Amino acid sequence: MTHTTLVRRKIELTINQILEESGRARQDFQDDQALVRDIGLDSLDLAATVVQLEHELGIDPFREGRTGVQTFSELVRLYEDSLSG
Image 1 (cartoon, one colour):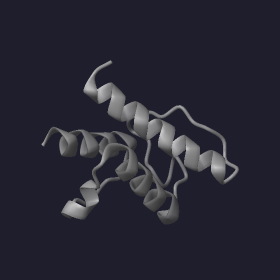
Image 2 (cartoon, rainbow, N blue to C red; image 1 turned 45 degrees about the horizontal axis):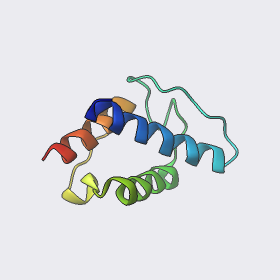
Image 3 (cartoon, rainbow, N blue to C red; image 1 turned 90 degrees about the horizontal axis):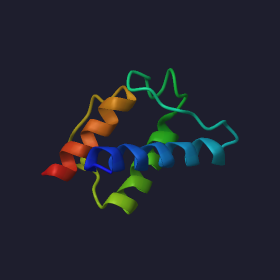
Image 4 (spheres, rainbow, N blue to C red; image 1 turned 120 degrees about the vertical axis):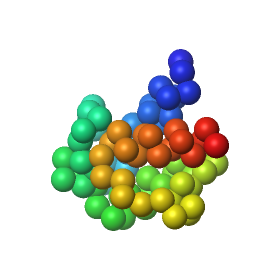
């Protein structure tokens, strides 16, 4: 499995866990899905996602001032870029 695939899979698992914990259905994510509009995440869900990913991946790219993430693929790319250096 490539680095990109591992990061993507970890993000998918994390978001689906958050969805399930709040009584929502798991999803199969598409790159162009909007995190809020299409997936249905709210600010609390997004914060929980970042906290969980920081715990599991050891990074919080938002702490570095990064913003503007709207879609699933942008979130994956943000974490990939942060892990790459």
